[in-house]
Image (cartoon, helix red, strand yellow):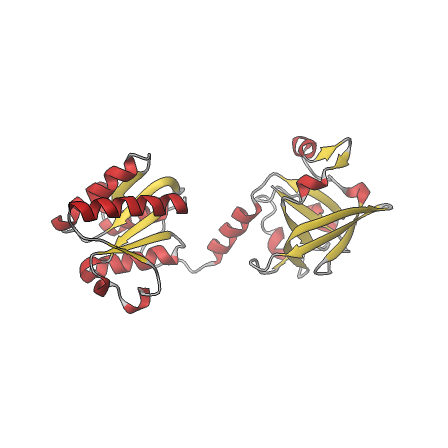
Length: 275
C-alpha cells in the first residue's frame, strides 16, 4: 500500500500541506477502514507507508517518493513533515499518468487535491516500469514467468566431477524445503541457453561455481548479476576467480566429503539470509 498525496503545496523537500477535507478521497472503502479511527486518519499507521507526493498536473511536474515523519492538524489543513527517499529518482507526472491502471488511479486524480491510500505495491510497479525502460536483450529472450522464492539454481561446468558437489548441496537445501535445479534438470526449450536463462530469471538465488574458470559459468554469472539476482559465488580455487569478481565475496570449498558438507551448510546459511 502507499499514500498518494496530490497537492499544490508539496513542492518543498521537507514540508507541505493538504486540506483535511480531502483525506481518503478516491480510497476504496475497505482500505479506508484500515487507516481510520473514529472517523479520523490514523497517523500512526499511515506513516508506515511509502508516499507518492505529486503536484497537480499531467506534464513535467515533479513527483517524488517520500516517507511521512509527522502529520499535524492545523485548522482546515494537515501539515505534513516528510523526507524524500534518496534511493528513488524524481519522476514526472507524465510518467505516473502512464501507470494509472497499475497504481489504481483515475485520470482526474492527477488534477485534484487529495490524499488517497492505494492498495498497491508502489515499489513493485516502479520496478516493473524501470525494468521495462531497460534495453532488451537481442541474443536471448528473458522469461516472463514469476520468480519462485524457493528456487535455487546452480550454474556449474557440465562435468561429472561436479555432480557430487551439486547433489550434496541439493540434499541439504531440499531438507529445508528449497528446490534446486541445474540446466540439465530441465528441457523446456529446444536451445539449452533458453532453459538456462529461464532458470536464472525464475530463481530467487543463483549459485555459480567458478572452479576451472569455465567460460559458460562466467557468462551465466554475468547475466545473473545484470538481472539483479542474488548470486552466491563458490570455487575450489581462489585462482579461478577473475579479477573483476575478486571484490565479491565467494565460498571456497574442497571437493571431498567433508568439504562438500561444509559448503552445503554455508550455502544454506547464505540462502536463508538472502531469502
